[in-house]
Length: 135
Image (cartoon, rainbow, N blue to C red; front, side, top):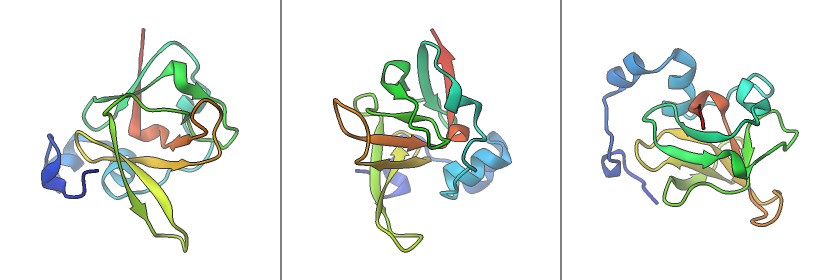
């Protein structure tokens, strides 16, 4: 689990991130924001392909692990191997597991224990933090 910005392969200053991301992407990826439920076109994207980090292009999830969680956010039951890092998020008066890109440290969303088999996990991701690369 990466805990310090300097532990990531890709490091940029805040200004460099602002220049390379849209305001919405910067808010989510760099400031740990959350997009409104139901606003991402990726929630209803079910084509074959790979979901990559919008900050650095790291492959994170495949369409094979995507499912409709009916939450309004793109959801997956498993990430690609060695694609993510996690940390404890104690905001909003609860404890959650926050998911980050392990290459740039960008905030992607959270993981919950209410997903489908085979993992039982629900990686609830902000669509603005992802780009979809069709096969």
